[in-house]
Length: 185
Image (tube, rainbow, N blue to C red; front, side, top):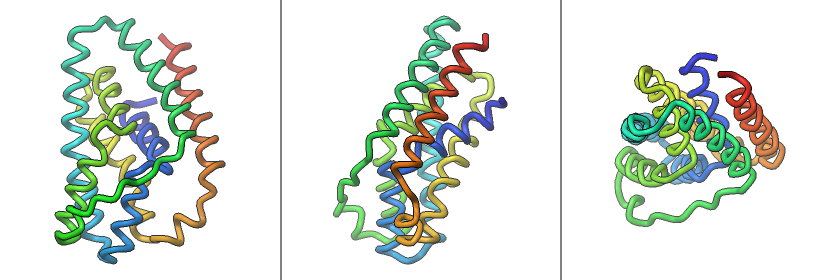
C-alpha cells in the first residue's frame, strides 16, 4: 500500500469518535458556518501534522530500521486499543470568543497536540522520511475525510453513527495494519 493511502487510512480511522471530531461538531453547531471551520481544520492540520511528521524524521535519524518497524507495529497495536476508548471534549471557552475561522484553527491545533492522530503522523513521518510530503498530505486528507462530513451534517451525522461498532471495526483495521507491518519486511 502506498504511503499516501496508509497515511489517509490511518488518520481517517483514528479520527472516528476522536475529540477533534467532537470539536468539529461543537464548532459546526456553534458557528453554523462550515466553510471557515473546514478551512481552519485544513490549515491547523497541515501545520500540526507537518510539525509532527518532521519530528518523526528527526527521531528516525537516531533509530535503526528495525526499531522504526517495531515502533510502527507497536503504534498500530496501541491505536487499535486506543480507538476503543471514547474521547471526551474539554470545553475551551477562550476560543469561542473569536470568529469561526480563528476559533476553529486555535481549538483544532491545540486539540491535536498529543492526540492519537498526531502520534500516528509522527510515526508515519519516522517510517517514511523520504515521502514526508505524502505523509502530511495523506494525514491531512484523512483528517478532512473524518471531520468535513461532521461539520456539514452537524448533529445528524453524530447521532447516526453507531460509534461503538465503528470503534470495533477501526480497532480491527489497526490490528490488521500492525500484522501486515509485522509480516512484511
